[in-house]
Image (tube, rainbow, N blue to C red; front, side, top):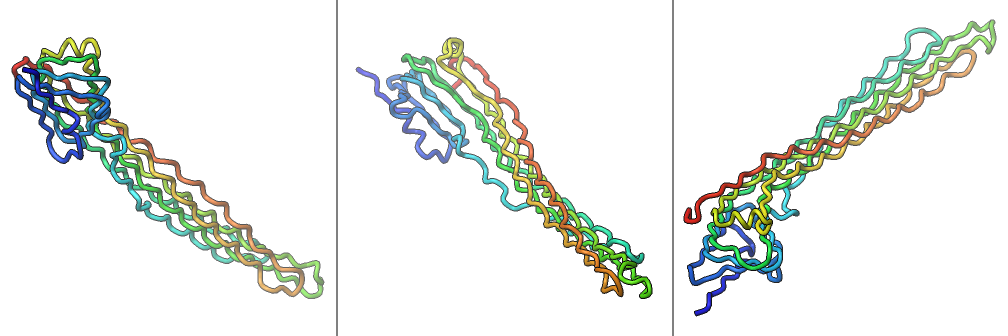
Amino acid sequence: MSEQVIRGETFFSNVSDRVVIQASSSQKVVFDEAFGKNLILNGFPLAIYADNVEVVGTVTIHAFSPSDVPQPKLDPGPAGDRGGDSRRSGANGSHGDPGGTGGMGGRGQVGTLGKGASEIVLGIKNLTGEGNLIIHNVGQTGGTGGPGGRGGDGGRGGDGKERVCPTFLGPGGNSPGNGGAGGTGGTGGTGGPGGAGGPGGSIIYSDSLVSAVNIGRLVFNLAGAAGGKGGAGGPVGSPGLGGGFGPGAICGGGGSNGPDGIPGQVGADGSDGVTNSVGKAICFGANFK
């Protein structure tokens, strides 16, 4: 009487709960890369209880799909405060003071923490065939951090004050007061750091599989996942307006407006999230199931 074949790949279609593959002594579970090379658990636990499991080609079981990552944070950090306007200059013939620099934008939100991988139980007595079974029980990658906030606008420069010359000196006695420079636009906020990667899951396997592990036919990867990407830096604030020149003089020309403020720098990306802990592989006796 020939063994009844149970196709292992069929258990991994749109997984939404714990996966259990159980076969009697007259049945054989077969994983064939031609029918499914990458099998996804969507973060749920897996248990295989079978006397005989055959692997054809190289089949990898993943805790999470590489594309399964948390939604990025989209809301930016708080905007920086507007720089203060400078008052008009006090002394005759003096230039207006520069406007205040806009405040730095706030840091973006931290990305979402990746989910941890679940437990996998391999109650298998015999691993047959010439293929390789790779268990990639790695946590979920962390989410992308939020963008930094916009820098605050620079303040308006102060007005200059004309030195009014006595009329008997003629036009040459005038000294115009230039308006103060507009304030520098605030620096964009730093992007939020990426979320920490999820921790690796554990694998419990029977001691009959030790030789398959030692020769590389059964491979365990239990790493903590990578952290998410840092959020983008916030945009710069607008430069402040230059102050006005001094008021109309009896002699000489008025001062010109101050120059535009210098744009702030773009915030730096946030750092990657921290990679979380590695899972454990635990070997038990063959009849632990």
